[in-house]
Image (cartoon, rainbow over all chains, first blue to last red; front, side, top):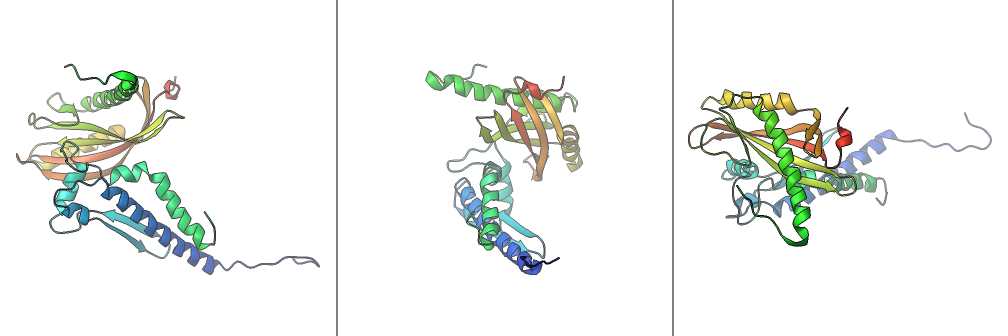
Length: 127
Length: 151
């Protein structure tokens, strides 16, 4: 209902949804890179092949954005990555087991903030 | 066995951290041991070569909130069975049934407020062709929270 003095606006939901999707993509991209960097500080290093196999990636679907950080992405590191990550009884001159799981759970709030920041910036927000 | 202790001003703090983790491990070990026959070894951190069947429990501290006394730990149950892969899968499933979604588990002076599984992966066979797997849980722990226990 409109009167003599009124404000009328229209929200274009398709534009809003597209901005949210782009922001979520950007935020996820930043968060996965952030996690990869944290993990690379902890990954066991012998030849460096395992560390170098680390990859951060983002895959966008219509309504969902998936982020992934993975190690063991090469032929010679695929088995090694699982074993080095899970075997807490191994000794390491450099690095440690749980080099991916630990920073992910220990920094869950930071990573969530990074994702939120991506969405906020897509709408012009400062946060 | 007498374990080395840290001296000086840090001794009390580090002893307290160690005590909490010892109590958590003991509480979880009691639950796990009750699931299996006595020939299944339940150990902290690593398994000896024998017996074949065993569960190693390892804790990793992820967050520690000094204000609330709440900590979040990752707990790994590394299981080893025989040469039939179904054995180790059955062991992991029994642990899952006992712990996944459980809450308010007393652990000495602490309480495991919540426990849930977050990942599982096969570790293949060891040198003796025994199957192994790793199941990883998160536990939220109240280190000053006897009030978490229902009376």
